[in-house]
Every structure is written in C-alpha cells, then in structure tokens.
Image 1 (cartoon, helix red, strand yellow):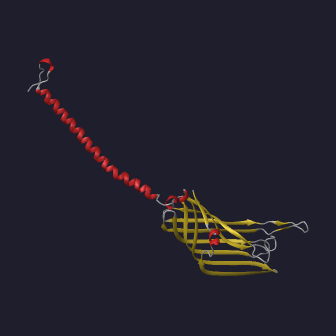
Image 2 (image 1 turned 120 degrees about the vertical axis):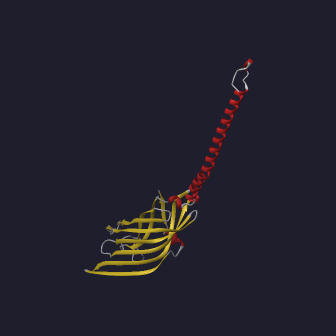
Image 3 (image 1 turned 45 degrees about the horizontal axis):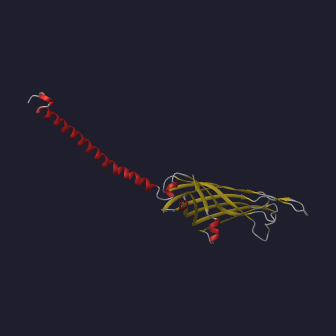
Length: 257
C-alpha cells in the first residue's frame, strides 16, 4: 500500500510497517552486540583468573620471593693460631686463635639453582705497653682466599628452603713473624637449611646452617733454626655442629637485595 498522509497528521499502515521493521532490526543489532560482548567476557574471565592465580602461586613462599635477587652473606670459615705470648690474653697455656670469616654473594638464577662466591679475609695486629717494661708490637696476621659453591633446591616450605650442593674454600693464613704459614683447602658436599624471616615481614632476611661430608687438606710451612719444615695433613669426615652454641655462632646471615 502506498504511503500517504491522512487528515489530522495520522500515518497510514505503510508507514507503520516501515517503522516496525526498523525497530526489529535495531533490536536484533542490540541483541547480537550483547551476545558478542557476553561471550567476550566469558572468554576473558578464565584467562584473567588464571593470571591472578599464577601470580599468587609464584610468590607463595619466602624462597620464591628471592629468586633472581642478590643475596649478601657473612659466615665463619675456620680458626687459625696466632703468635703466642704477645697478646696478654693469648698465652702458651691457652689457645691463641683468630677467626677467618668470608663475605660473599648468592644468586638464585632460577627457583631451583643458585651459585655462590665470596672472599675470606682477616687482618690484624697490635702492641703492648706497660708502665714497668718496654713496649712491643705484635705480629701482623693475614688470612685471604676465595670461596665458591652451588646450591640446588631440594624442598621449599612457607619460610624454610632446603638445598644441597658442593662448596670449596681455599684459605692462606700467615700469622706473622716466624710462625708457620697455613694453606687450607676444604671441599664440602653439604645439605643446607635456610630459614627466611617472612613471619616477621622480612622474607629477604635469612639465616642458614649446613651439614654434610668434608674433604680437608692442610699444608703448614715454617722455619726453625734456619731449617724449613713442611708438614701436610688430610682427612675425610662428616661436617656438622656438635653443640647448640656452635650452631648459633656458625650460622650464615644473608640478606637479599
């Protein structure tokens, strides 16, 4: 039926059919757009949820938070004999020793593997002076050497990580004066427990202790009465702390940046 305008501005049936058709097409376009948008949300929701879950899982333990970070550590290596009779507290009746400690770094290149490197260093001396007698200088001692190692993660809990690996310490110690010089080589296969302080909000701070098997070699060279004498010793045995106090004093302190 042709379109025409009726009296009083009324629209005929042809015009009404056209308007109705336009509304149907508009509703169809809105419906299709709504369905497409809904499908997009459904497809995106699992991916977003998975990403969030993976992010939470990736930092679920203190150890995982220090992966690919640099850890600076300080630990005790061993004690060496100093020259007797110079320090008033260091007499022939007792042991006169000095601790050689190492400052090193640990880098977890992955969640399962880390390398370790450090430098052992000790330097000291002194002098004595009394009102009744002459003053005297003490022998200056020097300890120096590298330390290397690797750690492979065995198990990981919320605040505790357990790893194992080889460790090599090479230290040269010279007590000064005519005292014998020491060359020490220690090769260890150790299991290490590292406790992180995440329960105090500091997962980057940790202490660690280890135990295992050690191959020890020591060479001592000294001069007495113009004659040079050299002795060497080696041993294989288990490495570990015997008392609670030695466990505390031999803990390695580590902080990750």
